[in-house]
Picture 1: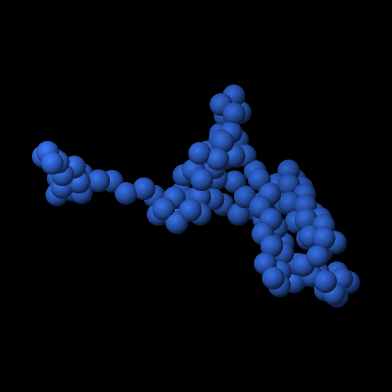
Picture 2: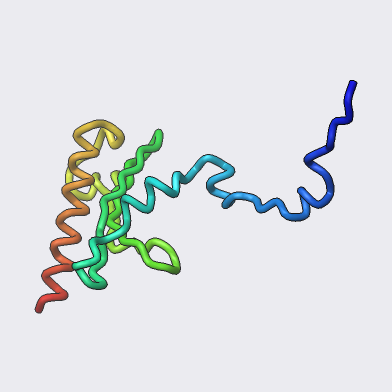
Length: 118
């Protein structure tokens, strides 16, 4: 058998650069995230808002967010556990509750926009 050179030696591991933590954990696809949050260049420092909906076993969370260098900033949020105040007592994780939670966050965002333009 011939000579086999060891490729992964001490110098290899000294220079090895690990990926981002969320990339290693498989939580964030940074290629997709960049395409999602980058605003068009002709819109000049206008934030690109996005709706984030998360389902859990007990709750639905709806958030409106935009991206900053420091991290994402949540503009407004609504949760399905707030729905009993508006008359919806049961089924806080079903399709109707998701619709109502989205409607609630939309009403809150429109109220914020109305306040900003006054």
